[in-house]
Amino acid sequence: MIQDIKQAAEQIPDSSNWREAFTLSGKPAGFAFFCPRCKLGIPFEAPEQVFHCGAYEERPLIIGTAAQRKAERTHRVRFV
Image (cartoon, rainbow, N blue to C red; front, side, top):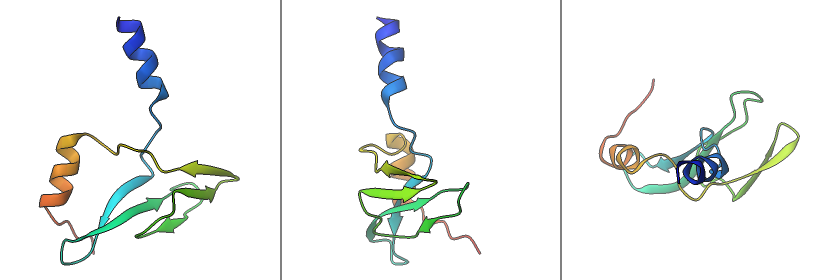
């Protein structure tokens, strides 16, 4: 049972480059993408596939935990 869970967890794509994007008024604006290696940044409405670092990366279906997504929706954080 535990091995099955570990194998399933390994198949979940790394979503550290993706996040939900919001406008200044707090409305959803699709997904944002940023790669720290090649510095490619798409601030909002990123396509389903992004070509960076010599390969395509598809947008994951689930980004972060439910608590993280709720915190991003309810708290606007603005970096200056």
